[in-house]
Image 1 (tube, rainbow, N blue to C red):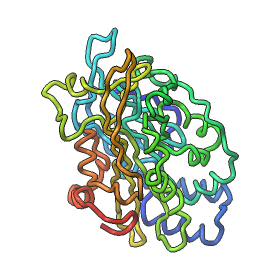
Image 2: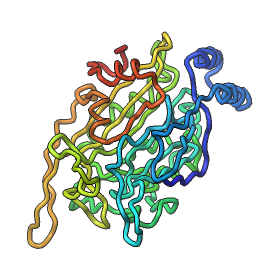
Image 3: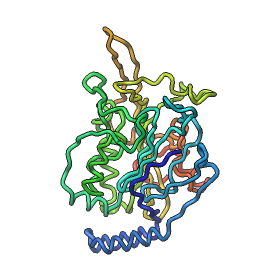
Image 4: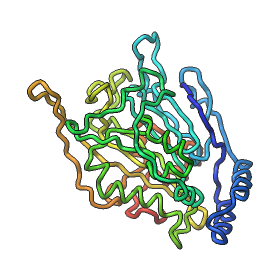
Amino acid sequence: MRSRLLVVLALLTVPGLLGAVAALQEADSSLPRQVETNLLRQLEGLELARTDEADAVTGARWTLRSGHFVFGMPRLADDRNNFTPDGFDNAQAGITVVAREGLVVANFDRMKVPLWVAQRWTRFDNTRMNEVAGQGRPWREDLELPAYARGGTRYDGNRTLLDRGHMARHQMNRAWGIDTSNWGVKMSNSAPQHRDVNQGNAWRELEDEVRDVVVRQGSGIDAVWTITGTIYRDENNPAGESPEDDFQNVVRITDGFGVPDATYKVVGWFDASGRFQARGYVFEQPHTEQQVGGQQQLTYTIPVQTQAQDFIVRIRDIEDRTGVDFFPMLRDNIENLIEEATPSNLWGAQ
């Protein structure tokens, strides 16, 4: 597995210190930078890490540590992402991990889009977001990705009806400054989302909820971790015996971008009692392809975008469909309880 690392923020926030952070925030919602820095150093001192044999992919054994992960970096559960790019003799692990101050990306190289993008969000981050002016959206290729994992900057939206959907929200990337805001409009943070999903009420409501819950009076939630990405396999297209066959029927557009069957978001947080909670959401965009007059035409069946809670699914189902283990360092009994549940609300206890 390759690792393209720029900036790694090495800390894992835990419930005990979140209480101290919350108390200081109540006293002063715009903490001096030195106070915040000291708190982050305390959090860093409690960082947990584990390198496991299960992490071994093509001989690499490592676990990236970042404050944008909770209970560990998401892991590949199998080899379905493996493929052999042109000019290579052997199959590659299939993802390129790029870590920046404001987000961590695992690019699905074969599809040229993110498999997942992880981002932490706190009241500190919300305050900083509001201190930085909005930035434009000059989409660019991410040159930190290998050439075979890049496909230009266009989805031909007028023809395909696909937006360049931010996996880590453009507005929220400002919390880490103009540089991260600019990195957030690299194509490594973009997935082909049907415009009715990307601009729909439910997706936007969910993004707003993640942004606002940390400053909502009485929420008891001081930090939220999100993992957002793409799904290319569904129950009707199970993994084949050969990983090379798993994605043969994916529709391709423009310069080789794979059109996902769905996009997802996994949201985790510690509630007021210090218990870890999580939700999974899937936004389906089933589609078919045909040639009309020698030109590719895509037809979609998009569920009505009403409210975010209508899209809650079991986290285990997202793991099965993506081949990603989202909370690998969480104790198995707790992980099973959380990932097997199908709650009916956005922020309540399981």
